[in-house]
Image 1: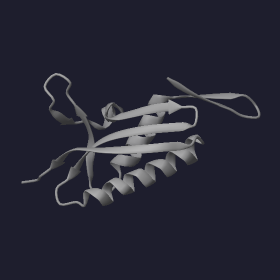
Image 2 (image 1 turned 45 degrees about the horizontal axis):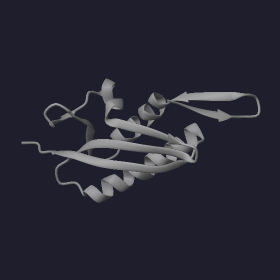
Image 3 (image 1 turned 135 degrees about the vertical axis):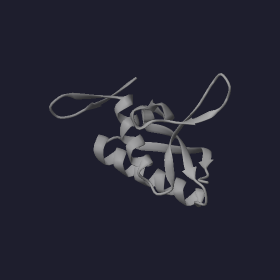
Length: 118
């Protein structure tokens, strides 16, 4: 799916993958986030995504009134989950609205796992 915005000088088309990359880059830099996650449909296991495949952990939905972003993350053990998620929501919303210029309706953060270092 592609977003379309009309300006004074013409139309701008933005692929959902671009929004997912921006959201993934912002979310992965938040304090306490180990990385993006994906859940295997076959066996249900959650795996940490490499830096080059982080868009698989993000879903972007487009409606007439704005964008909905679903982010799947793995956080570091001992972090306050609520604070980390609130930080991700605020930073992703701000960055997408400023860089893309479209309204973000919702940012849903799903914590798929916790990494415990031994």
